[in-house]
Length: 379
Length: 96
Image 1 (tube, rainbow over the protein chains, first blue to last red):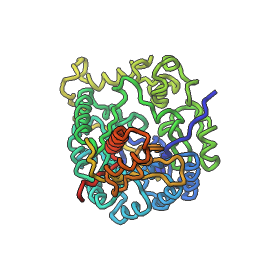
Image 2 (cartoon, each protein chain N blue to C red):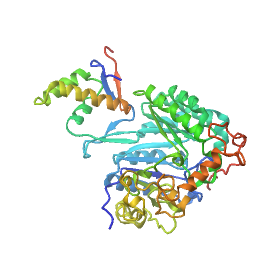
Image 3 (cartoon, chains in turn red, green):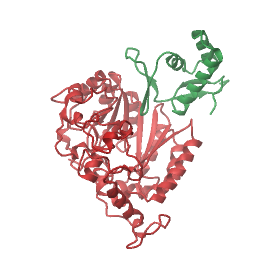
Image 4 (cartoon, rainbow over the protein chains, first blue to last red):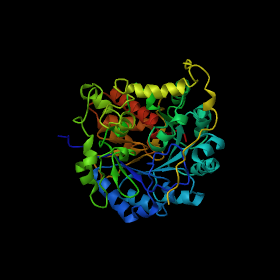
């Protein structure tokens, strides 16, 4: 018997899968949803009401690119009207100065601008689009507004050396927060993992740099970073625990416990057109499946950390161990940890046949442009 | 980081209280929400860019007159420093 869940705190609203960028680590599923399946404004409006009634405090407007929705201003107003705090997570591309004014007027609380690097060249390689200079323009426009600004840098082997430039960009902007989030390996990023995963040496240097930045900028800019969990000793408490804090609604209205949950075989997802958010949160099979501890195997079942990390990520367990109920293989206590170590060895000791120490220079093959699998734009 | 007694704290851009009709009262901010009650609510409601830190301390010392005044001051300064670290507050410098 599962425990009765507390209420969700955040609603992740994937308003659309359409996006002008083609990022090689996109968190959207490999199977993207088309425009003609997207929820209407009326549907979303009802979802926001139900979310607020359920105790949700924040709505994260994301995508795809949420600004491709022509009704984005109405959506912001509708979420604000029921008391939600509205975050917009955007590439900044379908935006000009007057549209930004309108977003702020509509009640947007927090503007999160995603970056693919500190320079045009790498940003174009990663996103398959020329977008960097537009982002720099958006940063200038943002200075004229009173709203929270976060810069999101997605970090990987190809851009991790640019951290000082990225930080300088944040310091020259009006951002109160900057996130350096290492790529998490699902979907598109999983397919491109061999070219994205940083070396241990890169990671160690970056953590050292970011810790110092955190101290220096305390009280001015909040510096947050997420390490790639393949290198961690213990897994991340994915989504704050399955069905504990967050609910994600896909463009067509399916309710998921996390971005990647669709990859787990045997799960069925309810749609907000057929059920209320409360029904889905409290009763749906998908949200119940890995809630609480009853589903856990050893070593999680009797582990002291099970209430801290909830056994890690179910999707990662499926991707790496072919069993969604297994201990997340990134955990040093996991029976399947050797699979992660093998992946790390490939990255860190890539010189054929030689087990080079991790202090060796980056192998040449990591410096040439990889064969990326780009995310397409759905119709 | 130390808090200047003559500065005037106010909520940073993108940080706001939820509506008065919503319970519990909560400070909403990027990626976080802080549930406020009792003294923490009294403090945040005075972070309006008008009260100086000194005034906030004096008003709460009155409100919580049974508590040790220096303890009240310490607690307030500690809480303001925490909110500053979260980037939930800006401080208008003294004399502006």
